[in-house]
Length: 151
Image (cartoon, rainbow, N blue to C red; front, top):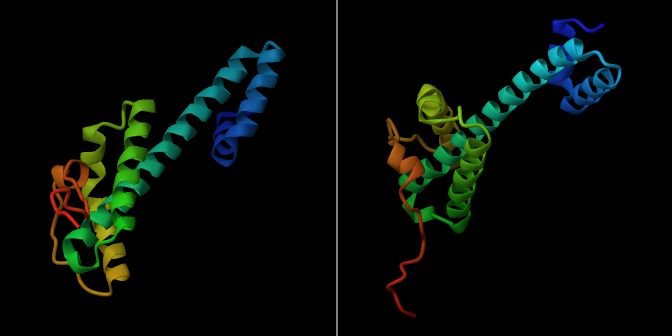
C-alpha cells in the first residue's frame, strides 16, 4: 500500500507510472487507494501546467522586451515566438480555467524580472523597461510588414 508521500513522489516522477498504478488498483477493486493516487496525480499535473505557463509567459515577455528595446533587430522569429507563446498560454487556460488573470497577476513581477534578465543576456545590453502592461504582453500586435506598403 502506497502512502500519500509515495503517491506524491511517484506523481512528480512519472504521470504515466502513477496512472498505471491507479489503473491496477481500480482493477483490483481498491478504489480508496486509487483515489489517493489520482489526487496526487491531479496535483502534480496542475503544478506541471503552472510551470509550463510561467515559462511561456517569460518567453512571451522576453520577446516583447526585445521588440521594444531593439527595434532595429526585430525579426519574424520574435513575431512567431510572441504569437506561439500567446497560443500556448491560451490553450493551457482552456484546459485549466484556474490559470486566469488573477494567477497571471500573482506571478507577473517575478516573470518580468526573469524575462528582463534573459533579454539583457540575449541583447548584450541593459534593459530600461521597468514594467510591461497586460496589453503589451497579451493584446498588442507585433508585426514586421506594413500591409499598406506596396512593392
